[in-house]
Amino acid sequence: MASWNPRIEEMPLDELRRLQFKLVKSLVYRLYSFNDFYRRRMKEQQVHPDDIRTLEDVAKLPFMYKNDLRDGYPDRIFTAERNELVRYHVSSGTTGKPTVVGYTERDIQNWSESLARAFSSCGLGRGDVIQVSYGYGLFTGGLGAHYGAERVGATVLPTSVGNTERQIELMQDLHVTAIACTPSYLLHIGEVAEKMGVSIKNDTDLRMGFLGAEPWSEQMRGRIEDWLGIRAYDIYGTSELSGPMFTECTEQQGIHIWGDLALVEIVDPTTGEVLEAGEQGELTITMLQKEALPMVRYRIGDLTAIEEGPCACGRTHPRIGRIRGRVDDMLIVRGINVFPSQVEHALLEIPEVGRHFQIVVDRKGALDNMLVRVEVSEEAFSDKITELMVIKKVVEHRLRSSLNVSVDVELVEPGTLPRFEGKSKKVVDRRSL
Image (cartoon, rainbow, N blue to C red; front, side):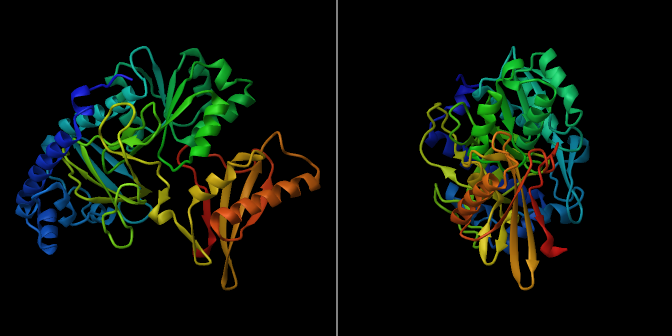
């Protein structure tokens, strides 16, 4: 697949690393000289910009955390003047103040450039119609995908979320070829379409989906692709970084992180030690060219690993694997670490299981209890108790083997569990109530 910017995307690795080091040095000197927050942090860490002599020396710099952004509300960490800003985005927070992200004109251009490279690596371009079913407004998802798609010459249909039947009609009438949304919302679209008598695979021109904003498994990708007849690409970003910025290419072997825009590290979530390529840990990113709100060693909380070796597509930039979950999404059940992505991985290997599940964690006396509610597939659902009991035992065995902890399983009819237009909520933890 042709590169959007071959000079950058196919840059020799040694040259890319030299560019990254140059950008890091410039960034660190600028922040130490003009930003009170970073200067104070560097002094607390007893590190000076002169101490950064190699790219590996980035590990000497202090981490940045989500709480730093909230404590700096609304704009105390910004390095651009207000009259230099062209946009704000605000992420909702479950606790405390939300996170405000400012953008200069160059920040918007780099954001669009990042997604132009990403979308074109999947084959999106002139002649395509992309339906953007992420939220618009303060949330970054909709506008990020919108600008990147327009940059590569695609026609954008800004549907946002909701009004699903209307979205399906427009998908057909306007010959939509691509969609950007959460995996759970695309599943919902597929189910609503079937109720309308519409097959996404046979009755639309949809051929690719850019799915993100929540963890999803390789098994989920397989089911989506088989059911809807599309190629499903992982898209990644957070509001703090700019928004959705990076995707897989047509090889679907990891998400390309453009090294001239971001420097990635994987660190041990507990110790902060930098891990080797291939080791799973917490994603940490330094944004190399952001002007309004620079990010140095920002610990995102997402769990992944850096993929080793070059990509067959010819792009030289680092790749990260599928997001396995979040550090703060981890459940500890009777001393065992459990991630929702592990549950999804195990369930979707069972043909009789549907596409939706819910985890309910409670405490009975002094012991934790984990219940997994699972929809049975339409084909396997039966009113015969004996047949359902066989499925239930298969699910219990698979989960126990995968999680190393016994769980209760409740089978429910297709269409019983909640559907979500935004990020799905797969876990109900009643222990904190």
